[in-house]
Image 1 (spheres, rainbow, N blue to C red):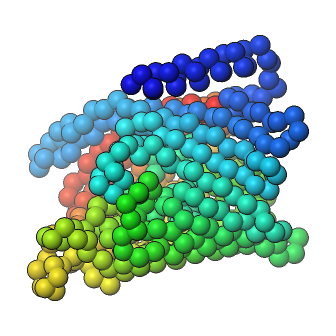
Image 2 (cartoon, rainbow, N blue to C red; image 1 turned 135 degrees about the vertical axis):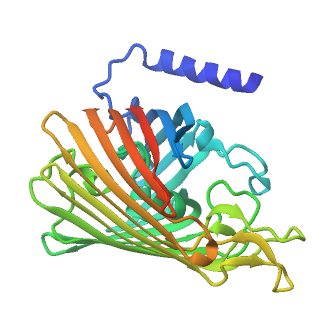
Amino acid sequence: MQFNKLTVFLFANFLLNGFSQEISDTKFGKGMINFVAKDSSFSVKFAPRIQSRYESQWDYNGSSYDAKELNFLIRRARLKFDGYAFSTKLEYKLELGLSNRDISGANEFNRNTPRYILDALVKWNFYENFELWAGQTKLPGNIERVVSSGDLQLIDRSQLNSRFNIDRDMGIQLHHKTNWGSTIVSREKFAISQGEGRNVTEGNEGGLQYTSRFEFLPFGEFSSKGDYSQGDLVREKSFKAMISVTYDFNQQAVKTRSNMGSYMFLSDGSLFETDITTWFVDTMLKYNGFSIMSEYAKRSADQIFAVEKDGKTRTGDMVNVGSAINIQTSYLFENNVEMTVRYTALDYEKITTIANVNQWTFGWSKYVVGHKLKVQADLSFTQKNEQKDAVQFRTGFDFHF
C-alpha cells in the first residue's frame, strides 16, 4: 500500500512540476501530454480516458416486466501511452485498465492477479509497407472488436462481438499494405499467438492460435482512419468501403470460446483440448454522414463437448459453436447528433442448448469533440428463443484526453 501511495505521489509531482509552467499547443482529444525529445530520439503521448455508464434492464416474467438491474458503473478507466523510440519506424503502445471490468478475470493461469495490461506492444516498420508487431494487443479479428471502445457509436459493442470475438492475445503479427494503382488498397494481416487471451503467465496450454485477415478498399482509404471508427464523423466526400475476411484457427484450444470464455477442466485437473475455427466477414461503408457496418461470424470445433479421458463421459463444458450477424446503420446530422439502428442475431447449434438471440438497438449520440467527448444513450429489445422481449436502457458519457 505504501509503495502504491508513493508511486501516485511521485507521478503527480512529476506532472505538476514538469508541466505546470509550460503552455502546450496541443488541444483536447489529442492527448494530455505530447512530448518529443530535443534530438527527436523518442516521443511520448499520454491520454487517459473515462467511460461512465448507467444501465437498467427489465425482463418479462410471463405477465409483466420486472426490473432486473439498475447500475451506475465506470465501464472503462484507462491510461494510454504511445509514441516512438530511436526511430519513427519503431513505435510502441502501452494501455492499462483500471476499472473492475478491465482488470477482472484472475485465475491460476495469471497467478490470481488483476489483469491491468490491455496492450503492451512494439511495432517495427522494417521494410517499405511491412510492419512487425510483437507483444500483447488485439488480434486482427472482426471489425467491431478492432475499433477502439472509445470510437463506438452505441454504448457498447454487439452480442456478436461479446460471444464470438477473438479479442487480445500475446504473440507476433505481420501487417502489410498494398497499393493497387492510384486508388485501390488492400491490407494483409497475419498473427501467431498463444491462444488463451491476455495476461496469461502460466502456459502455453494447448496449442497456438493462427489468424489471417484480408481487407479490401476498392475506393481508396478512408479519411482520418474512418474504417476503424464508427459513424461518419468526417462526412466522407466520396463513397468509401472496406470489405474484409478473417480466418482464425486455435489449435488444441482449451477455452469455450477459442481464446475467450472459461477453461475446460477434466476431473483430474488437466484441460480438455479441441481445435476451434472462427470465420468473420465484415464491411464498413461511409458517405456524407451515412454509415453502415455489417458482420458475419461463424465458429466450429472438432469436438463441441468436453469429454473425460475415457472418451465417453462429458464434463459439462462445451465450445460455443454457431453463427451470428450484426448490422448497424447511422446518420450524422449537421448539429453532430447521430441516430443509429443495430440488429444482431445469434444462432447457436441446437446441440449446445444455448439460447438463440435476436436484438434490436436504437441509439442516440451527441458528439461535442468527436468521439473524445460525447454523450450517448441506447434502447435495446432482446428476444431469446422466441420469448417476449427483455428491455434494456443505457446512457453514459465518454471523456478522452
